[in-house]
Image 1: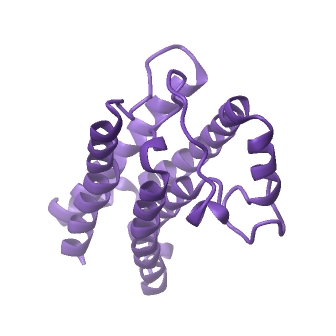
Image 2: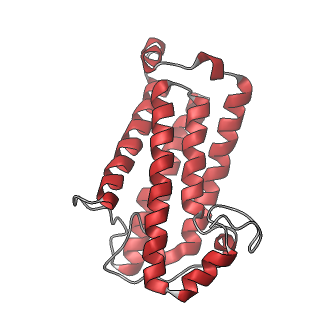
Length: 206
């Protein structure tokens, strides 16, 4: 179990973020990491993402490599430490990984971490993006929930909630940005494609 989590941690962050960033930079000459350090909401969210990112990695490594008694200091939620919850958490991790990778591949050179205000990006509406306007964010949300279910404690709960709320605020900001860039084309896309997941044109959670 711990070996699986360690390999997954390395693959998910290594492939989905570092490798994908390198591929995008090689293809476009643009650094896809667009989180700045200004005093505004996007920059604040960027700092939150980094906190969640570092915190999640730290707790996972502590759980995998640290002495057993260290984990008790994280405030374990014993009533959630059941085999069913763990199984659901593992399933979410397994589903989230290829979902994020496929979504990133289909975005191609348009993929960014944060809002790119300097470069125009193409609007991707095909493939997975026919069923979700934000499939990568959906995958990351599932990933955070999966980690919490596998390691239910006060810190992973806080990271899950903090990450999930921040992602939803970021989605709102990015959708406003895309609307400004693509205008009526994006409005039409929003009208038929759900924000997270669904059948195009049916129960659109705009």
